[in-house]
Length: 278
Image (cartoon, helix red, strand yellow):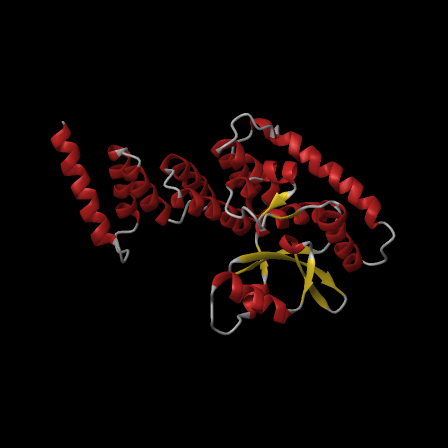
């Protein structure tokens, strides 16, 4: 059995494959991005303790769907996990160690805790990545039941999901029922990281943005856009040589990309500047 406290995020995503645990991955990237002294095992034990307590709470329920609904009550009502409506953009809401300590989070971090407990309890739960607002589902006798962890586990109809997606994202078109399909664990982790990247870019914290995009690159090694983004981020951070190297790698792997001409110009200007420095 591996020692999670000695495992890197990159090792975890490579070894776990499609069986990646978003909770485990979230704790590992929290340690590597912002909390170097974090021990993931402490929080995994905390999740196990929550699951044990939830199991006793759910025991009287007769069906998996009823237990899934009861789990939402356990976490978001009895347990007081809730959405941080006052300070939504606070990055602490995206780090599971902080969410578990404060019982405050954003839709996706609260959903990850629900999903982790649900899977420990062998419940038919899934993540659902609506545009702008993540929710969860539990499989019922007549189809999936949708729940909103950010709003105390409120039960949602499909019409509610459509309104929620529209209000959260500003999208004005027709609701796409594919948005209700289950989101894979790796896509959940990518969405968590993208939330952090957007926050750190908003406040122009380039070193932390670089750390986050490095995790995205480890998670999605075939997505060459991460190389371009790392080049631009290193440029903003003043690391010109690293910036040129990443842009060069991007062009080598995506020579026909729609932005290749502009990226090539940026790379060439960087190389000219570096040559003058020498």
